[in-house]
Image 1 (cartoon, rainbow, N blue to C red):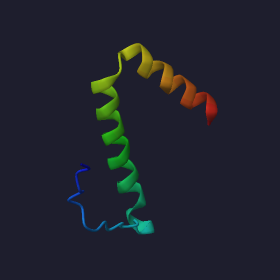
Image 2: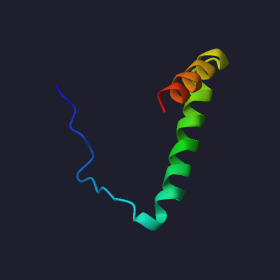
Image 3: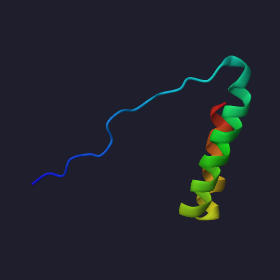
Length: 55
Protein backbone atom coordinates (compact mmCIF):
# COMPACT_ATOMS: atom_id res chain seq x y z
CA UNK A 1 0.00 0.00 0.00
CA UNK A 2 1.36 3.41 -0.95
CA UNK A 3 2.21 5.75 1.87
CA UNK A 4 0.49 9.13 1.85
CA UNK A 5 2.61 12.25 1.86
CA UNK A 6 2.48 14.38 5.01
CA UNK A 7 3.08 17.56 3.01
CA UNK A 8 -0.23 19.39 2.65
CA UNK A 9 0.81 22.70 1.08
CA UNK A 10 3.89 24.28 -0.41
CA UNK A 11 4.60 28.01 -0.37
CA UNK A 12 7.07 29.44 -2.86
CA UNK A 13 8.68 32.76 -1.99
CA UNK A 14 10.23 34.75 -4.80
CA UNK A 15 13.08 37.01 -3.82
CA UNK A 16 12.75 40.76 -4.13
CA UNK A 17 15.26 42.44 -6.39
CA UNK A 18 16.97 44.14 -3.45
CA UNK A 19 17.54 40.73 -1.78
CA UNK A 20 18.71 38.93 -4.90
CA UNK A 21 22.45 39.17 -4.15
CA UNK A 22 22.01 37.80 -0.62
CA UNK A 23 19.84 34.98 -1.98
CA UNK A 24 22.46 34.09 -4.62
CA UNK A 25 25.19 33.98 -1.94
CA UNK A 26 23.11 31.69 0.28
CA UNK A 27 22.34 29.44 -2.68
CA UNK A 28 26.03 29.25 -3.67
CA UNK A 29 27.05 28.34 -0.10
CA UNK A 30 24.44 25.58 0.05
CA UNK A 31 25.59 24.14 -3.29
CA UNK A 32 29.24 24.30 -2.23
CA UNK A 33 28.46 22.47 1.02
CA UNK A 34 26.69 19.65 -0.82
CA UNK A 35 29.45 19.35 -3.43
CA UNK A 36 32.21 19.14 -0.81
CA UNK A 37 30.34 16.40 1.04
CA UNK A 38 29.57 14.30 -2.03
CA UNK A 39 32.36 14.74 -4.58
CA UNK A 40 36.13 14.33 -4.49
CA UNK A 41 38.23 17.48 -4.89
CA UNK A 42 39.30 16.59 -8.44
CA UNK A 43 35.69 16.44 -9.64
CA UNK A 44 34.88 19.76 -7.98
CA UNK A 45 37.88 21.33 -9.73
CA UNK A 46 36.65 19.90 -13.04
CA UNK A 47 33.17 21.37 -12.46
CA UNK A 48 34.67 24.78 -11.68
CA UNK A 49 36.76 24.63 -14.85
CA UNK A 50 33.73 23.69 -16.97
CA UNK A 51 31.68 26.47 -15.40
CA UNK A 52 34.36 29.10 -16.06
CA UNK A 53 34.65 27.97 -19.68
CA UNK A 54 30.89 28.26 -20.17
CA UNK A 55 30.61 31.88 -19.03
